[in-house]
Image 1 (cartoon, rainbow, N blue to C red):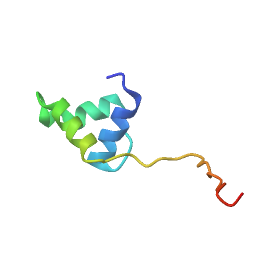
Image 2: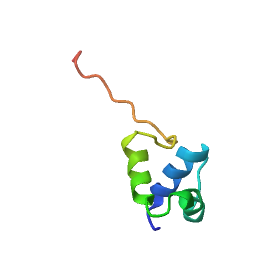
Image 3: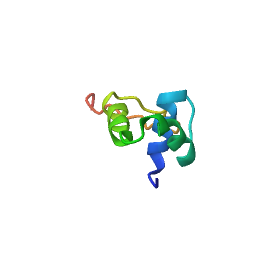
Image 4: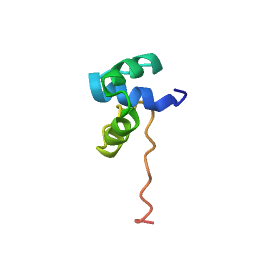
Length: 64
């Protein structure tokens, strides 16, 4: 479909694992004609894939 994050989000919402575009289309096949609605419902529900990567620590400057 072209959107890098969309397939991972849909795959995680349905299976708990990351998927590619073909896997996303396979998962959304029962909802043919309503795929965009299902994707929007997943996004609005706040279901997101886990984030991996470095976290920035924000320094506290209030004591200066």
